[in-house]
Every structure is written in C-alpha cells, then in structure tokens.
Image 1 (cartoon, one colour):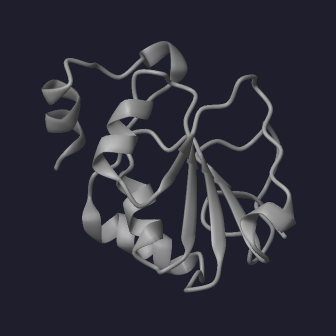
Image 2: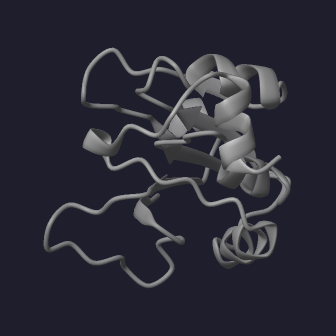
Length: 131
C-alpha cells in the first residue's frame, strides 16, 4: 500500500518538523535492500522504520529485522502491517543493540546520518554501522 494511502487510512500526516518522508516505490526499496547484502541468518536493526516499507524489503532478504521507531503513532501501524518483524519504540534518544542479542552479524540502518558523517564501504544502504 502506498505511504499516502496508509497514512490516510490511519488518519495521520507526516510530521514535517521531524522531517518525515516515506518512500513507497517497491523497485527502489527492493534494490536498496539488495545492496545491503543481507540474507538468511543475518540480523538488521532499522532505525526510523516509519511506515515499514523499507522494513518489509529488508525482511524480504530473509534477514531477521528489528524495526525501531520513535513516533508512537507509527508503532501500531508497524505492528499491524508487519507481524513477523520485531518492533521497538525507544524510551530515549539513544539505542544500544548488542551483537549477542541480534544473533551474530548485525547491520544498523538509519535514514539520517550525523552531520559530516559518511558511510563506510560495505556499511549497508543508509547504514550507521555494521558489526
């Protein structure tokens, strides 16, 4: 379902103050997920899962996905639309994931980089880290 339709169905609008933008093009999402190089046995933590469109593409790689979303209005949508994905809402602005909890190799993706940061080669699509 397109992002605008999903938002409308739940009576929501993007929060411009938070810079919310939702990508819904399945071809682009699938291509980005493929570039992450994930597969069965891998784990990925997506920071800022939004409406779950990229989350779904990541799950399609066979990797275990943990979707982290701070917007309390979007968390119930994620849980309803993606029943096989673990959804977490952080209690603060920081998040710590241990390699042991994620079951081995983990990738961490975030839609926004800190100012001045650049992704490392092999760090994933929008990755902040890969361990």
